[in-house]
Every structure is written in structure tokens, then in C-alpha cells.
Image 1 (cartoon, helix red, strand yellow):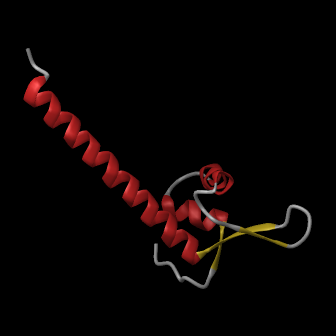
Image 2: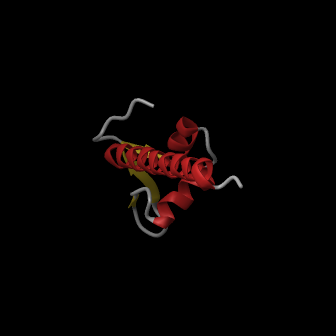
Length: 84
């Protein structure tokens, strides 16, 4: 997804770009993992700033790298002393 930092994106657009459900994007917003703004009164329209999308992608990449490092360490520990 080519992200324009200053643009506001609809939830559906972000979900389609990530190939996930709209509910997944709303959960990320509700958990605070993905920043969004409401426009209008009442429930309003939810929009996601392009900069927030970039931050979310970076956080996901960082979390994936951390998981991969842990898995590598676990495998190395098992190979070194786990087999009896």
C-alpha cells in the first residue's frame, strides 16, 4: 500500500489494503495499536491518518522480528541441551 502521510483513510480502504476484515482494523483501533480519528458528531466517521498506518506497519514488523529472534533462540537452546 502506497501511503500518503497527510491523507485520511477509510477503515474499509485500510482493511482491503491489508487483506483483512474491517473488524480486524476496528480491533486494532480500539486496542490503541492503530491511531484513528472520528470526524463529526455522535459516532462520526472513523478515519485513519496515513502517518498512523506507517507507524502501525513499523510496529507490526518490529513485533514479527522480535518473535523470530525468540524462536531462533528457543531452537538454539533446544539443539544445544534439549535432546537427551
